[in-house]
Image (cartoon, one colour):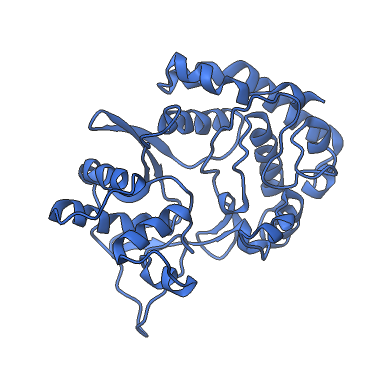
Length: 337
């Protein structure tokens, strides 16, 4: 199902502000995340050969700005066309403006900036993905491009593969689905790295490798205050018969004034969502790790984040002002309790 941003685009495109869940499903694009498509016909549509191009990014950014600012609908045909093109990104989740574009014979998710951003989100997310990779975490391929003087982050879709007949769809299932949960407040008690590890252990072709990777991502998210690590932002992927953990994607930081305690979106240990070292290590066995290996993974991530976050951010084009703004997110005092 589309998330916050996707619902806004669909509402704008249909002219309705109140839709049923089934309507959001049917008004969304056929080219949604994963291999499933939904439509009113018995036969699925043929594979697409033509998608938005990166040359369309400036129009898409302008259309996203109009939706994000709740500007009245326009009769300008170019803007209306761009708003329709934005529908291709509505099933990709998240609250921030995005669209799907074709670039270098691959499909990419274009993630735009917003007029009210406190820092350069495309550059910071690009830096976080590079930092995670330096922590030996598998991440989605990504790059930053400039459009009309503004940065746009391009993240390559790992659920699509270019073929002569179009783009082959790979199956993908979010952790939200694997946990048989949803976004309602009452269901959030089921949001758990520990429970997701149990499901991943059953589904994965290589559970030891995938659970080690999931443990590292959990530790990384705590170390950089990625408090938006909800189950929609984790997934398993099957490019053939077998399932495995997907590359990491949708990383962000949440710098906070309070330095004593922070909670992840998902439970990460005996003390629930509390993001500190002791809690992160409390359930290492559920990730098929022994205490020594779990401690080594966490310590290596702590050391890499401590020594590398600022150089990597600067290398990624994040300004000194923005680095200062996001600094409280990294290895906050309470992390070591």
